Length: 383
Image 1 (cartoon, helix red, strand yellow):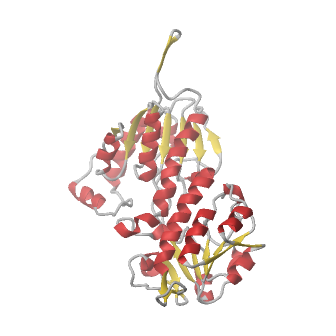
Image 2 (cartoon, one colour; image 1 turned 120 degrees about the horizontal axis):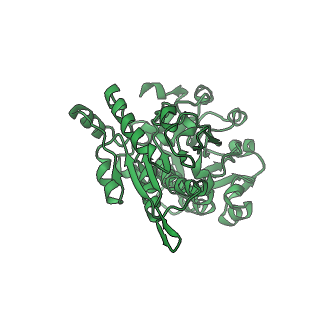
Image 3 (cartoon, rainbow, N blue to C red; image 1 turned 90 degrees about the vertical axis):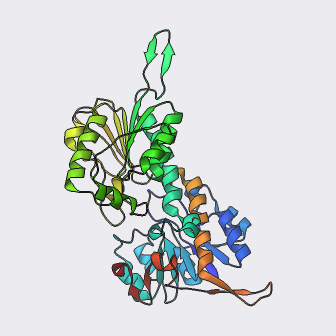
């Protein structure tokens, strides 16, 4: 059975789905691997490294697809590549399923497509397949470094003969995996950190990292809803949104650095920072909008661009931060995929030369959750 690795076809993506180390793991499981030439180049994995790990090199995505039973990718397949798919093939990647315009095409081709973002994150046996966590962890770290690079002052407090330099005030909005790593990184750099999240249970995590919790009043019913969301965001009430805006407005008016991480699967990112708040911020302050690629948490943010407001606030639309740490992001992502792929196969025979066979089971709580097309049907609408 052969696994194919497709090169990203967009300039803003440097990651690769399978690394040479992952090739070795797949080979031990009994797979053959074919990699599109140059697929790992931007992540510093040359074709020669894949060949040394036991993979074959193909000249094009079409060649990879026609040879492979399972096709791995970082983002969605290029439109022209989907034309080469045949019935029974499997596609695995971060496919942005709720915005993906190719699901009908995948279904018509008879392909089974797994979107890794849909993994049930509260399921213990799925934790080593959680691409959102592995990528967000690195993104939260890098977001702070991006902010430090944009900010015109140092993060820590300095006491010098010329005077005392005050520590930077950092506000983190959204305390998931990325937000927690951002808090930890900003604290390590010496900043004073405040943070807010829709989940009241995040307070303990924020304070354990040395951050201050920005408290927003919440009804008992809202608190219960927030606890039952399985780690994902919930839809707050109009009053909560109003109260949160007031708390955020006050905190951001005094902030030097703001990092926003809030995203909701299948929906545009919630707007957390509005123009009226931006107008109150200090000249030279920096906002890193990690949700810029899904609509943005910050009013006026533009994906992959840095905008300076009339009052001197810099808004960085950080749409794909993990790609800026391509080597490590690819390593973690590839491990996630290898762990998931092991759930799709079963050995045929009992001896050492046993072959592999696909073991697709839509009743399985992992496979069933991730599959967006199967048996020539789009499954996403049935959730």
